[in-house]
Image (cartoon, rainbow, N blue to C red; front, top):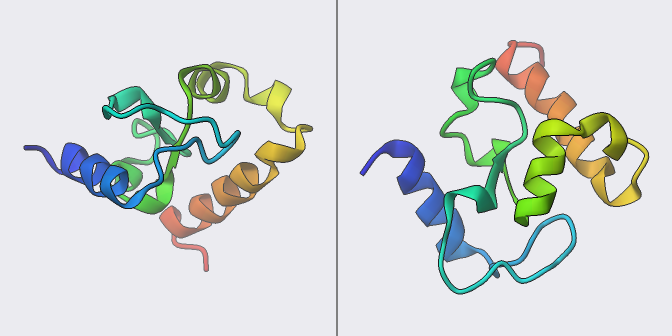
Length: 96
């Protein structure tokens, strides 16, 4: 298995299998779409296998994060994800 899949499995086993955004139950079986990278792997390759860069979400939440972040910025339940995003940028850019 690849490192990313191993990370997803470890997160899944330690989780309550609920979205960290809404608390919605994600189901009994793990799917890759349940694990959203806060910072994209393409821009921040160091975050690809960093569990801190992963938030468990529903498919709709994942799609919103990937494609409509600007519409989420004012939604209270997303504030902590935007704060995490800024903290991770500093971490991966060596600014501490």
